[in-house]
Image (tube, rainbow, N blue to C red):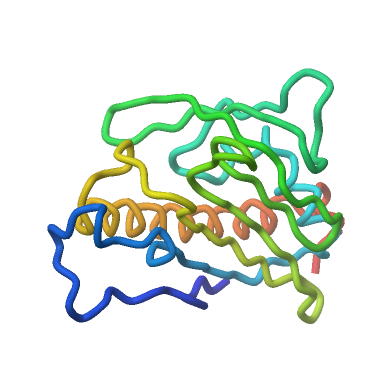
Length: 185
């Protein structure tokens, strides 16, 4: 299983670590990572769109649940607990894409005024799937920091988190072949 960089927006050469919001663009803070996993795109989609399972793989998300009666469909809301450096907080997110076997995406804070867009896509490759997970800052908000250095640190932290998540997902799939539709090699 390999996790690798597919896209990353480099810092502007003239940008400084202490640049304030006024000179920053949210679009500078985005990345994608991908990994091959030994499961079909349909099965991978089922796993990633079941938001309650994210705690199995993510190093900093837990207790994620859809609102009562909601599920992996566009417009559905869910809550989840995040933790970092001994702090915990709860976020509300809204599903903005739910294409079974292909793509699942949500926006932290909701589609109308969200702060971060998370997406997953599934592409068949051989007997498995290339899973791509992306993170994109949609708007600047002081909750994430007030300088380029702060936002670079958040992006870098989330990049590490996504790499860990993808590696953990691949390992979990390899260790649970009956659950993922594989009966062994």
